Image (cartoon, rainbow, N blue to C red; front, side, top):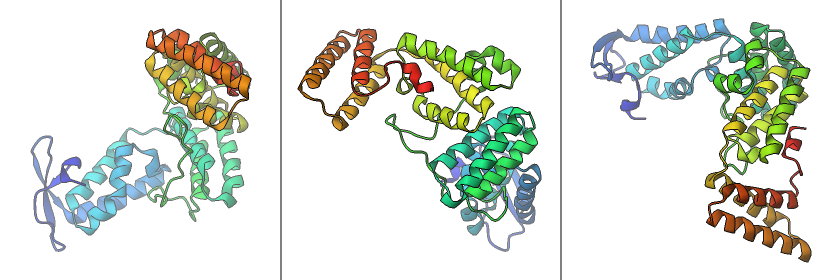
Length: 340
């Protein structure tokens, strides 16, 4: 890692015996003399604060996590300015942190996704039980209890002896990639939930009935525009998340997904990018599912129609031809079936 990507650049020789170091803030050019002992104490203090708040490094922004991963190297190199930058980054992240509905909902989604992607098989039942109880606590707005249950789920998932907010697993489970080229779900913003379901977002909680109503509205929208999970940003990962949340009776996380999908469906543009993605899906499915003579003739006719529509820039028309192809290749006749 180059020194240009850390917030503080060490501008002095950092020997083992150095009592102080002089660091420069690249944003302002200001220099600051820092005692090495203070930096070392800061690391210890940051770790203790994480434990006290019952927050894990993985709950903090990605940039802070990246610093944490390089901390051992910084320390072994006695690069105390970089170590100090890490401590400051953690303190800044913790300063504005609140264990509230948004925090716990996002954490629930991360932990559930990791559990679905892998982790210790012998602990899976325990992790799923903890997730189910955490979901119930979240629905009852007991956010601190839900957070603690999620910490216990992470501890079991990564086979740690006890919760340690500072410790990272050697490798995080990676969600199975989709044909979109990614995996693990797509981040949901508060603005999306608000735009997709203003009433539910304001309410801040949900029941099974709320979820059913939101799914019905989304289903009508998907069927009207013939939109399928692959057509929406992060759609396939989010539909997988939704199915898992419903199994856990995690109504609010599930509603957040439906609201975000509703907003993404409303904003989806049937353009060259969308129909190209559909064409690639058709190609992939066809390679795995050959037809008889009659089916192959129908397939080729629809491909010709879709191709000509794309050439003529009639993307809505191409979209519908490709939808017929997807159904021919085994997709449900109604896109809303993906919500079942």
